[in-house]
Amino acid sequence: MRRLFRLYGAGPLHLLCVIACVVVSGYVVTRIHAEGGWVRIAAWFALAVIVHDLIVWPLYALADRSALRIARRHPKRFLTVPWINHVRVPAIISGVLLGISFPLIFQLSSRYYAATTGMSESPYLGRWLLVTGILFAVSAAVYALRLARAHRRGAHAEPATDGGSASRSVGKHSAAELPTPAHAAPPTRAVDPGAAATSGDFPTPAAPTTNARPARTRK
Image (cartoon, rainbow, N blue to C red; front, side):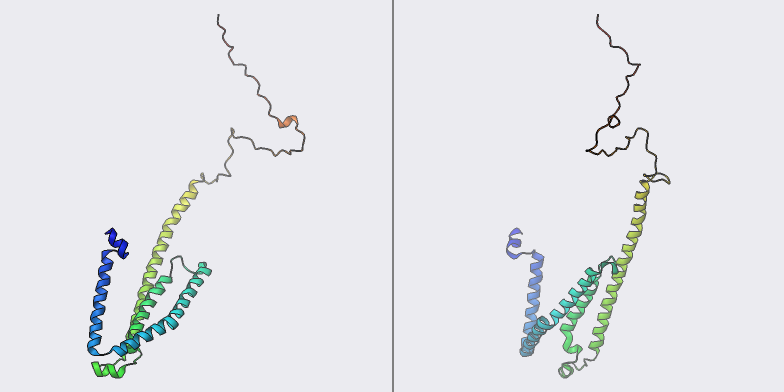
């Protein structure tokens, strides 16, 4: 297992998934070769690479960075639960569906599609919009649930913090209002180093006690 991680860089499950993807892709290639649509597939891939990498990717990267800057620049205007992923996930899924099915959504191959399947491409735009709306609605519902949980946790945390601050006070008086005990040390007085020392600056020696027993002498 360690040798597999060292050579491949991942576990056996990842390797099996990659092999399955290669097998499915090979099957799709054989079907395309049987239909004779190599030119259209190559043109579709070239157009997708050019349009995505040079036009679409900079646009949605700029939109994502702008949203992050707004959230970081004005953190008090937004709620405590992060919202950016609840916009990213449905937008990415909707964009992938649009990239895969844009010829059907925008009815770019209506003649070929109608001749092959006998159906129309008109429902695809409405279905894509419906799926996009459902994705954003589900994401908003999940975000609302996360907000409700955050508010509940904050409501449960407030009594605990109030109890902790109340335990530091005695009755209705705070620690500053309580009287100073008799055995407490007197407040210190600031002494000017340039001033001459007086007798009041030195402590008075304690008087000897009269109850002390005299020391016993040995006979």
